[in-house]
Amino acid sequence: MPLTFWGERLMSVKVKSAYEPLNELTVLEIVKDIHYFEAAAENELKVKEIGDGNLNLVFHVEHPSSQTSLIVKQALPYAKVVGESWPLTLDRARIESDALLKQSEFVSTLVPKIYYSDQTLAITIMEDLSDHVILRKALVEGKTYRKLAEDIGTFTAKMAFYTSDFYLHPFEKKDQVQRFSNPELCKITEDLVFTDPFFNHDTNDFPKELQSQVEKIWNDKELLREVADLRYSFLTRAEILLHGDLHTGSIFVKENSTKVIDPEFAFYGPAGFDIAHFFANLALNHLAQNVHAKEPFHRESVQGYLLETINKTWMTYETVFTNLWHEHALDPFAKTDGVLERFLHKTFQDAVGFAGCEIIRRTIGLAHVADLDSIEQKDIEVFYKKKALELGSCLIKYRKTFTSITELVNKIKDA
Ligand code: SR1
Ligand code: MG
Image (cartoon, rainbow, N blue to C red; front, side, top):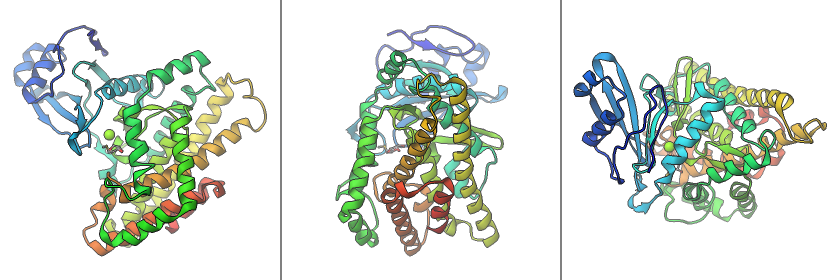
């Protein structure tokens, strides 16, 4: 199988002829084969497995004395979070490197650089971002980042516009839909976000103290009808190339820098989905700050920052998308009054509903968030999880009554 290499030193090398899970020794062999580091540095390389996500192996490779480093990410043929009983396609490594390449066309400063990718081994070798921290961890610690809203608003708006039918020729758009067909990873979202939490399913995970709140969700027919609509949108509306998993664990930050990582769930889906996941995870952190931020002044300031980030992200999204539309839209109705506004309005109301689903699944589904799970005192954890379920249900059921970002921000503030 031909290998692909991106970066300053273009080359084609064959590192392994068949898939095998890597370890610290085999990672070293591969890194040496691609000659990323100077030959003299190769005997001094240090390798460490640092993956703490649900699905993949992640190796950090460093040459300490020259302070050069890179990341080797390898997809495992199963979901690490569950084990070998949950097989999972290796094609997600191709999706991830293709999505990173596509994102680097439009938002190059907001994604890691790729140096090399190999479909046989299901690896992507990329820029080391260890001078950044994972946003979720930083937010739990009460840290704030000034550029975050503008960066995520820009990322989501540019990716939405440039990969949509408003910009692309219909043949190109349909080619891209095929290239990013990602059925197995979409199925995870269909099940874990849009199905299992709304039924008595064995993947769900919640404290017994939440049983009656959870049953209320399972029995709320009005809620279930709305979830069914949102789920159907996710299944059928191939509008834009989504990151597909844009929670705060998929974002690296440092002062004045934001990098969106891990687009292995990328696929063509409904435009409101990514921004919804960002909002939902900020909303969960906002709830959790009632516990994590002990000092009232600090709590008020961190929660204010989270709400302002949601507000500013949407305002940036609207502005960036609108400017691109006026400059570059090829759609025959682009200049018809109200067409853009209607698209943005629909995207926003969808986002409110998708955010509700994400909030509920992160509270009672298989994959939780540290923001709420790290609350040490059980009764307090349960109290805020109940609040999360109420907020999520309200966003899903009443999403069509939300007409502005201020209304969403106020709802999260009052949760
Ligand atoms: C089995 S994967 C569980 C979750 O981790 C990923 O980051 C996605 O959010 C997925 O739903
Ligand atoms: Mg991930």
